[in-house]
Amino acid sequence: MTVVLARVDQRLVHGVIVNAWYQYLQVNRFMVIDDEVSKNENMKTSMRIVKPAGTGMSIIDTEKALNNFKAGKYDNQRVLVLVKEPETIVKILEAGIKIPKVNLGIIFKSDDRTQITKFIALNEKEKADLNKIHEYGVPIKLQFVPNDPEKDYFDKKGE
Image 1 (cartoon, one colour):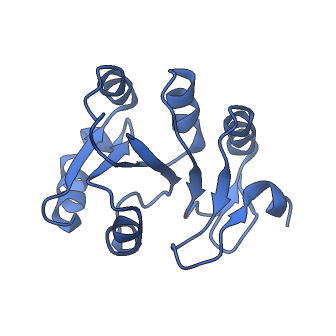
Image 2 (cartoon, rainbow, N blue to C red; image 1 turned 120 degrees about the horizontal axis):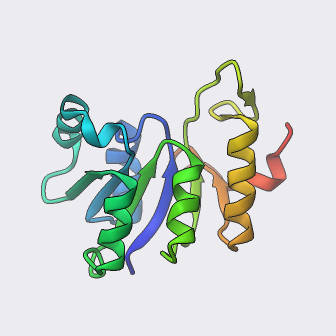
């Protein structure tokens, strides 16, 4: 198996990821897919510092991620994909890469976003992208940490 989970979290790599999700999922690679962050050496360095020893980390743009997946670069690894917005996951699915589940972590409130849970605010584009992910048959779950009960996004929509 390659991707064990894809998480939409604007903070990307942080304490909850490296302490809770890493152990729970038994991943051996964190894959941050973000076109802007992949060009920011300071952000990349800070994320690499907090990753557990012996764990791989890729911080790459969408095009490189798709090429690496298609080339089978991660075929023998358990990968946690981390993105800032659902649109990136749509691109991965459109390229034919399998994702078993999407987890919504932290998406901050802003002027164009409506709060749907304590940790998640979405704009219309993000909601449409989540609908596209759902159309691929990929479950979308709300679960901040693994010990929280897993809730289906479509059961919480509009709350």
